Image 1 (cartoon, rainbow, N blue to C red):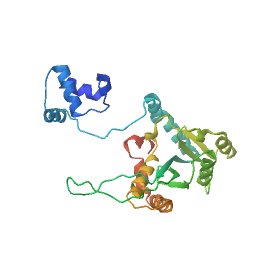
Image 2: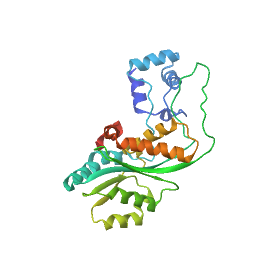
Image 3: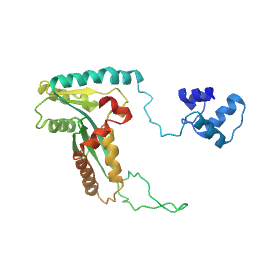
Length: 264
């Protein structure tokens, strides 16, 4: 029993030469049979895992290129230093990100008789647009809707809007995408002489950005509505984002997600 618990806790199925990447009851049964020569029913395997304190859970997917050392360093050293610098300067910290939304994105569930797959009417047309937003630990959110690709000039425009009315420095945390490091952006940041600073998350670590929760929230809201045109979808997205602006407590909750608690 101890061996099973340790094997599942510390290893992926691939490390035991399985092709599938998730621990399922079938894989666990095969692992037990392989190691101990015991053939258990799936229900017996389920009981064993429950006795060991395991349950089925939705995994957090992360890029294999992600460096856990850099992630740990960001959480324990880099970001605390940014936070201390911001406090000393009276700066506001924002986490910013870009995302696209498409008319063929659907999520959620609906009740229906058992054995009868429900059908929901949707538009057969495909259209999309992009969004940029930034959230702060105190519950602020700023956003911009943009049609077409988000490039360095678009990101600069968003930063300019973020600086409107700012009486104290603004610190913005973003990922390492090339548009965030473009010369155009660097020149604009330099022109503000310390009133705007950019900081970069570790590579392949979107889970560290609380702003990811904004897109999950907006896409859930929009995907539950019936849209017939890009204008319909845009109005719904803007409405969802504006509601977030009126709900700072909800925005603050994005920083309480397990992977983002470091930033709260």
